[in-house]
Structure formats: C-alpha cells, structure tokens
Image (cartoon, rainbow, N blue to C red; front, side):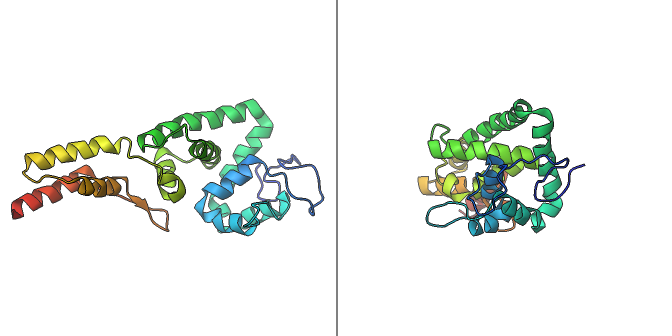
Length: 222
C-alpha cells in the first residue's frame, strides 16, 4: 500500500540518495524537481527550498518530500504520484521510462499544435520534465495544454500552431461578411482562441463560433 510520508513508497525502498546526512545538499531526483517546477500548487515550496541566486537546493531531499506530503495538494494528488514512484521500483527503470515516453509523444503533439519549437533547448527540456510530471499525476491532454499555456515563460515562445488555421478560417468568414480583419485583430483573436489560465488553474478561451458571432453582429450594425 502506498503511504504518505518522507519516502513516498512503502517497504523501505528509498527513491532518494542513500546519504542520511541532512546537512548535505540533496542530489535531487528528476521527479521531485519536475513536480515542484510544473505543479502550480507546489511553486511556493519550489521557491522556498532554493537559493534564488544560485538555484541550489537548500534542504535535504527527505525534508523537501516532507514539505510536499504536508501540503494541501498532496491530499488529493499525492497517492497517485506515490504509486507512480512505487511502480518505478517495483517494475524497473525501463517500465518507468516507457510510461514517461508515452506522455512525451502526446505532449510533443500538443506543443506542436500550440506552435512551440520542439528544437528549442529550453522548450525541449521543459516538455521532458512536464512529461514525467504528467505521468505521475495522471494528467489528461486538456490539463497538459492548460499547464503549458499557463507557463508564461514557455508560452511566449508559441507561434500559434494549429490556431493559425482557425484564424485563417475566421478571416475568410470576415471577408465573406464584409468585415475585413486586420492583422492586429487577427492576433487578438488568436490570443483569445488560445486563452489564458487563471490563478485558480481554469482555462478561459473563446471558440471560433463565438468570434464568428461577434463578426456577424458587427456586420449587422454596419
């Protein structure tokens, strides 16, 4: 049975360094770092356990895991994450990597559709970390897309991707209705179609039909 606690797994297996000296800098395993970086609810912990100048972790791994398992987030999400970590030790590294790779494939498709350049080292590293976090949390595609859109540092690099074709369709509709759409208006529409993520983690975005109705209403006024 998966237990909530410093090791996150039952049976004495330790996903962390074997060194019990908590005064040493932790050799952080990737899943801990990725959780802290990609789960908005854990950002406060991420900021608290790192030196803002050097980026080094200030606490031992066990202490940081205690902070995670004591958070409100862990009450609803922790057991799922712990099960994934336990699976890594039960079924092996190869099994674990296969699960993460399946999410990498799905996330690559989502990122490409958003217009992100997968060859960009920063984006590539972010998506790789997001894949591990998504597997451990059991996130679906919608939640993953919301997470990417909510990361302003990454999403500012997006070029629109699949949304560009929707904008072209809206432009054609505007011309048909006698309401030409400028490039600036098209960009505004694209931002609305992609949407934004609120502080509560909700994705707010417009649909092509909603925008077309606005164009129809504008045409009626003209």
